Amino acid sequence: MVLLVVGVMTLLVAPVLGQLRSGFKGSGSKYPEYFELPLTGGSQTNRLRGMFFGNEWQHLSNKVFRVTAMRIEHYEMSGGTNLVAVAPECLFDADARVAWSTGRLDIVGMNGGIRIRGNRGFQARMTDSTLTISNRVRTVIQRELVRPITP
Figure 1 (cartoon, rainbow, N blue to C red):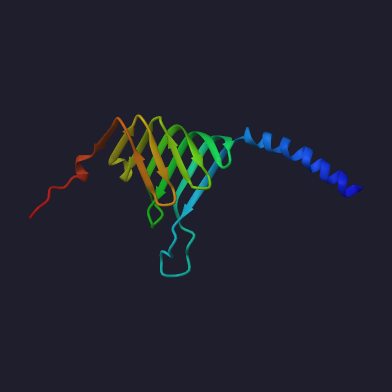
Figure 2 (figure 1 turned 135 degrees about the vertical axis):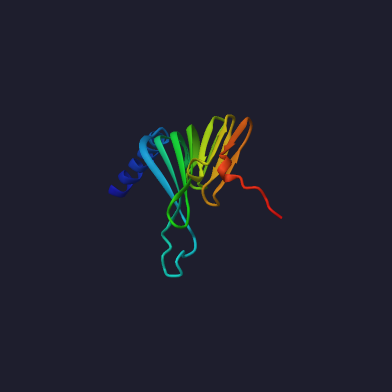
């Protein structure tokens, strides 16, 4: 009899919990991405390659979230930050580690030497450090970074 009551309760409660979870909101979450190979020849494999930050997270479906104040940092093997990308909002698939949006993306790289603004869409893949910017892109490169080619 107890087993029957537990079974019926499970059938009644599980759908309610699933509905609550789909609208869940949280704040201040981050997803790290690590280098795959040891960097120093030893057993050190926990160096960060990149980090995905979000100010406010809203669960939409499965592992897809709507994220506000998105920030992606990409790190050099030495640990220094070599690229920062920020967007007002995006969607993020936590399983695939992919962020995308039809909105704006601002990028600063090489300690401010390169600045890029994409006004109409992007896709960022954390697993292979690929960032695709589409439509209405403007790039500014500091003169010091551009060296003439000498034969």
